[in-house]
Length: 530
Length: 110
Image 1 (cartoon, chains in turn yellow, purple):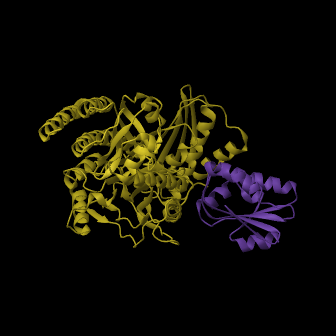
Image 2 (image 1 turned 30 degrees about the vertical axis):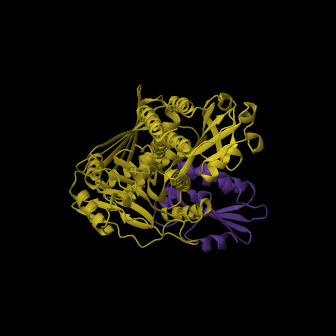
Image 3 (image 1 turned 180 degrees about the vertical axis):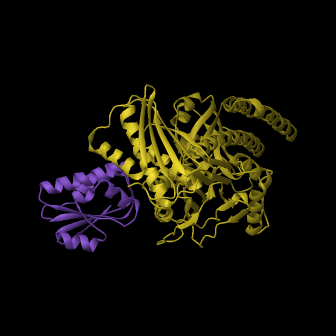
């Protein structure tokens, strides 16, 4: 073969692959490539094997004259046999006489092949597969032919790699989506989250989560597992589940972090993660928070926007016996809490302090609406998308309540803690004292329990809560159902009525065809009638 | 819930919110805290911040069960809180000895 002919053939080969890369499905492209290789090199067979995800097995993907190889789904261990040796050494291998060589694949012998030449499919120095050609008569391949085959292999490798990364990207997207929570909908609480994947790695270790605890409070978490890729994302998924499990068990933030640190050390020793977990109690106007090596939460309250002064802490997994402490903060209605990961702040060659200041002033001067705030923070801080690191943002704000409270709840006992908390928050805003809040929320909870147990049976229904305060400071709470009233039964409900009466000034039960309303009233600023 | 035994009296300490959601989980553990040889049971509500009618009914049920076996119930209640107000309204004192602290309750049952 002259240089001239070889060069033309090479161009020929490149042309088909370049054009094909754009639109041919991978199988068709590889097929076409093999047809060309067989014709140009004048051989009898050609096959492409692809390395499995485990990087230990080669499987045939396309073949000419060796179709049985693909059909039978032969699996060849890396390091063994002809193709296995090529993958292991990343070097071309030539076999002049197959009868004297070790092969794993029985089809090569069954077909009566005599000579073989194989080259690795390489992408960025890593093996993704093997391309080999064979002849039924003895053949010695020269250097030009080896080069030609290698260049076909390079084309195939690129095509395979780009399809694989495409598939990986699809997986990455759906994995990441499945790990981002559906934010809970709570009355008078606004929640918004944002996630920005890293530019290159696609999958990252950042996440956020928000969920309602059984007692009606709101759990909020944001974290950053060190590293990128599927593995970091998988660890993140495990930490996220662990956090929810511990949190739903009623543990405080510091205890949850201490447990998670132990969990992470067991899942993967040496891996670390930073995390903030907080519990927002809108009822008590309180935020309980703990951090593990994570940048501090940001709070915007009225005109002031500042970082929470968290005590120094180590990341999860970094130390064997570590206990994280809770910090309890006042959190007044209307205040916004912003949790974030450092991917939002970091810019090359800049200190973290500058990034923190940028976020603080941005949050301070932005609109109150959290969806707008989230968009603006991403637009301004990551104008070209995320950099090397992914970024997450979780924002929550207890909305100021209307002078007259009105909210519907599913008629199930799990609604009661949240209902109590909402009423409690409204009572704070109308200036009730702690004992008044405790008494009225308990009385309302008893009325709601009555409605849930006696108005609906097992059918789904709604319980409505209304509250208002008159000019003379008398609070009226209405708990209304839309079911068929049946009289409370058993000592339990008798005691419920006893409590409603004991904790308020007056209880009135108004029965109508369309449902029952329990009206509780109490004048603020004086001791209860009991 | 935590249970400590002082000679022949168990002290079951409940903290946080003793409401209808919690009660179902606590019921069996509370009833099971009484050993065969015990003289009685102290339920320590010092750390409890909330109790509703379902929680109240569990205390009444506990008192009734103990009485059937000639045992006594003492309840430790933090003064001046919601729990104190609630248990006064339902008159828990009619079935259990009320004490401001665990030592007093133990002395009473011992």
